[in-house]
Length: 238
Image (tube, rainbow, N blue to C red):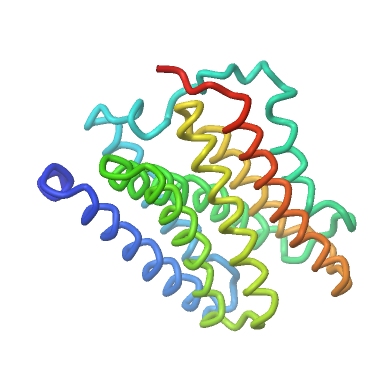
């Protein structure tokens, strides 16, 4: 792992994208076959997250991959209000228990880890590897590949239109998270937002088709506006 990273960071990032997509897709499928949602996915996510965190720490790469506090203090609450708005989407129609208590626990564990893994892999490994040659290209590829990665949901039984909308707002969110990471030097706000947004989906109340479209549009517009604000009014520390 270390040799590949030193030799070719891009190949290293692509390897981890493959490991992540294939292993989690398989784990989700087996969990469904076993009749317990996320029963295999949750422990797998914990193992992958723990492995990556330990590896990054041992390689002294926590600063490089944003596992540090942002240059813009977390106390600057107003700066992060758009992230709170993004997280709130899954609460718009209320809250309910969609799974058993045990399955809900497994779901939340999985989604917290997914937030960590996807940010580290797409915003950390992939973006950083590409940014060495071309920053704009790195931002675009990191954002678009993150969004297109959700196409795997079609293979897991999701409907076409909801998946298409998910891809669209995932690209928008990916763009925001990339800009936020590049500007503040920290992935922590991105990981927290991503994890909360995913976790709360386990407790969301089913919405009408109109509300689904409104939510999707909201999740496209707010990240793009926030990213524009960051680029326009926030200076990146040297």
